[in-house]
Length: 249
Image (cartoon, rainbow, N blue to C red):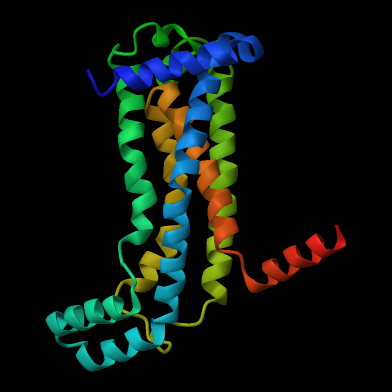
């Protein structure tokens, strides 16, 4: 309980501060504000992960050479790859850190609104839909176009729009990137490359099955991730366009 009480108290404090503006949806607004604060605090990790991805991309020719030399000896290939990353100062898991760092916050949010440990927080709503409820509950009280169902449809629409934009951007970047292995695809790599961009749509399932409060956290952090990644992974053309706009303004 000691892990959940501080977050519950913080949410209550933020909700009280936001109540004059958002009224009955103040707790939902507090969840959005808390999520944005968490992501802002994790932004340095995201910048580090982006630098790591660029560094790994720059190592693609060396990796291709290692695969040609040690492709038949997985142990040698693993040691050589680790040595190459170490010399370049690149961590292969750096890109996972922002996601992993969010898991404790998501778990606490889920626990607060699914086990009753959130106390009176469970009585709060988002546009009338209970923050402790799920999509199945909304379908049972008015259907998908009922008052509660429309709240979920709005969240689904945001997630679908972000996922579609992310999917198109990822496919465009993959098409523009040079082959990492001299044009030779590793076994199974092509299938992974096709499936990976679709994973962003899995967020729709998460929003549908978790409590609305946790779903609101997921939607907010997903939107932040899409904007943050687009900013940190701008192409040279986008950077030039940004410089041109800044110069004109």
